Amino acid sequence: MLLDPPQTSLASVPTAIQDNGYVALSPEQFFELSQHKLNEWQDLSGTWKNLPADAYLKDGGRYRQRRHASFVIKNNSVTLAPHRAHWQPVSYNALHGGIDRWFEPCEETFANSSVLKDFLLNLALQFDQTQKSVDSAKPWFVEVHQFRIDTTDGIGRPTPEGAHRDGVEYVAVLMLERHGIKGGETRVFESNGPQGQRFTLQKPFSLLLLDDARVVHETTPIQPMDPKASEQGWRDTLVVTYRRGGFQDSPST
Image 1 (cartoon, helix red, strand yellow):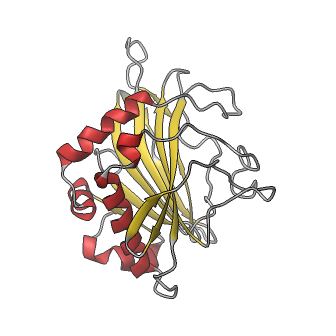
Image 2 (cartoon, helix red, strand yellow):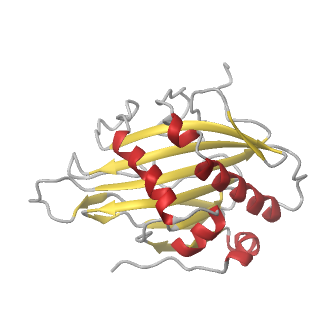
């Protein structure tokens, strides 16, 4: 049985993150937060059909396609940063950490769209309210990941590294589409405790926000709803990370 995520009001987002370490928003709340309508996001969702294969998967899989972009948010301005490698320490990503991963950049129509930039800024404002002890004038260093996980190999793994943290302050996971799949259950656990929640982001444009210091997260593998179907299934998401103090970089950089 697919469980829907627990939700709160948009006005209570900072408090809910402070209290629970995460919060889920409905599609209606997401559109209100992003200040853009369904048709505007649908215009951008076509870019998920042109994601190149992830060449860094160490499990030999062919199930993940992705693009990557980086932004700096300062003084209510969102600036696309020069294209850079995505890097994580092994302590946060035991499977793919410790290496510079140069993914193809997000398409210009997506990365420079006002729809995306307004969403990134409005999320930053929410996180500013959540992180009251930090000077909100300090910039946010933001990484954007477009993902498609498909059933080419029979099973697709949204988080092949397992339950993890990302080494940032906050993580946002936006569900774009589930097509012809089962599975893909999201699991959120306390990083230093026994409590956890499991649910499935089922509706397009459902949004999950995570306090990366307080919770670990993972998503279970997906499988085709009908193994005999001629068309493969897929799960499209937009994952955005927010970090103060700079991007995560290899020590050798």
